[in-house]
Amino acid sequence: MHEDGVFDGMVAVSYDDDDAISAPEVVDPIVDLLVDLAEGGRALEFAIGTGRLALPLAQRGVEVEGVELSRAMVSRLRAKEGGDTLPVAIGDMATIHVDGRFSLVYLAFNTINNLITQDAQIACFQNAAAHLGPGGFFLVEVGVPPLQRLPVGETILAFACSDTRWGIDAYDVVSQNFSSHHIWLQDGSYRQLTVPFRYVWPAELDLMARLADMELRHRWGGWKKEPFTSVSDKHVSVWQKT
Image 1 (cartoon, rainbow, N blue to C red):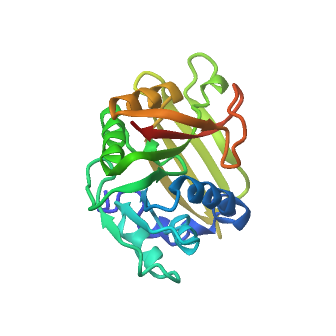
Image 2 (spheres, rainbow, N blue to C red; image 1 turned 120 degrees about the vertical axis):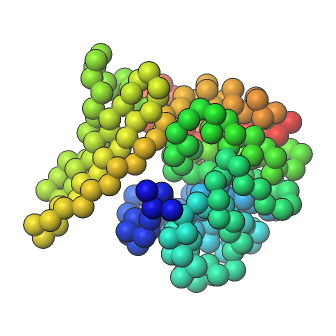
């Protein structure tokens, strides 16, 4: 595997092209909530990527730093206006340490699932807590495992199907690991990408937080503080360092 993992140059160059995660109407409510939670203090983004959230957050006056495993993604960040001024540490968000204390540590868009063992996910919570000052917040955005859609004995769910793109998730309900398989078709050729994940339940995340001396303060069904219900397909959860 490339040193940047699955998020290499080929992925990084087109990462921001997806309006579902990068359009202003998507990003603005996220930044609004992050500004509120930062409460005038410093923010640290685990998996800062191309700066999709960190750059507009910094433009709102929040002092932002980042952690990122992929140099290719950071290279895209650096090419953007203001991207050369954000401090970014290259490394694993479960183990890397940066100097200082923060009012907010946040981890968006299912990235907690990129840590493919429970131990690594626990370590990520502990690392977040270690970077927070007293009363600081750790925020995670992640999907609710869609296992209600899996008939007993089935392991495959399609999430995209068109003339130009196919997407399939393959689940192991014993290990909680799954793989997302992406295929893009263009001009008679195709490009394929497989990304490994580990899905995690809301209650499991709450226990990870307790192990890191944090308590649940908020759980919403989205960035606009929609109610979290039995049919929510994702949640935005906030834990506070005790």
